Length: 309
Length: 273
View: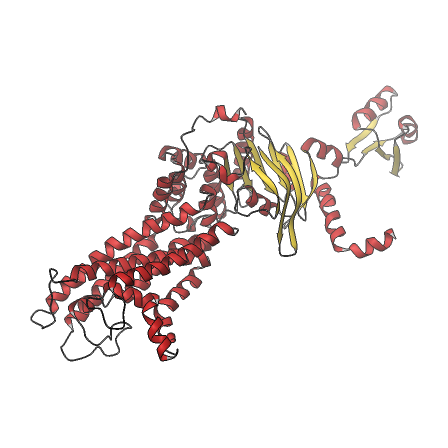
């Protein structure tokens, strides 16, 4: 469990993380989303004590990270992929980390195999591709058999097979009861992996929700219906919260009723439908709407002030 | 939480000896460590052997490296002519060991594994210090023994059993070990290989020269306390009139190194990695 409370980080007069609060729970995959520069990496660095907060607090498994006697057993972390000396081999890199905790060599071999690095374990990391670097970072994160796994942009640079591997791996880690947190700036990718979403922009919390809720809200685009009896269907569907527009003689766009209801009403009254399509706005578009607001508010404070006055 | 049941590997724990073991493994698993170490020892042996082999009485060292032109030469000072060069190599090795982690990003992995941070600094110093002490003392012995071949029959020839010879050779090893530790500390303090190496070279080679611009009375008073001068007092066979005794030289030089280490410890714990 990661608990972030009123976390704030300032560099000079620039506030990178601004009174951020959220919780990462065991047994769930939490997607940590925000556009580039939203403060995701800084937040993750504060979670593992690399940066100290200006204000607020963050605890990992109940206490601050540095107080744990076996931090790698508490939380496994992948920060930027380049947290490795390029002159060292993958095996020696993992072994050096393992020594600090008394983790046996057999565990090092285990995570190397798990990450699919067996054939390149003896090679210098400097010669690794971005994808292999990511796999090594994930192997390092799993080294201490941690209760929490926190990965910054884990699918960056991975090929489709690697992306699928990460997706399945994170799912199984969460199913084992571990807390999983991953950051991304891609909504569509994250929605496939995560249960929970924490969305930030300019260091502030924009949404703390579940993927299901976010998807439901995002798909408020109405239902497109095509029928020869559009006039009749329009009156059948009418209701207090229902708005219906049409772009052509045979097409209706219905807001306020879902496809299932429309189909049933049409069947009950013998209206033949040629098409019945939910018009879901894409998750990516919904995410951009959410984050764009913050950026616009930040960019034009004077103009909005005048409008209000 | 149920998580604890899944992971009965409670033996995992960070301890001082384990961090030391990790730093030891890190040191030896980089090719650059082996190369720089080899360069340091070779410089030490080759310069000493050549200086002894080409020694001719009466001729003062012409255009020699700094520290070599002290006028009255003895078998030990000739054998240790390479110390200045070796000190740059071992200093660079120390810098690479610490600042190299910052320039590559490795430090993020290191400090997430050891979030208390200070054990990392002490362990790096505890690995490189003894390694350099042993290897360069052996190197100095080798340089001296090769030198006695070259000095055979000369008036200044000495043997290992003569007064102060072993003390001087071991003093050179100790000096180089402390320079390496200073390199580690400078690397942590400045977090940049180039910056730390520049400061190291500046302090060891350039500072004494610059200081000669000071008024004579002031210069004479503080000159023996400069790091490089206090250091060379540690391994001089005969104490010159304006230098510290070997023991005082050790105390002063170790004091300088301790000061840099304290600065490094402060920066390591107080600022974001």
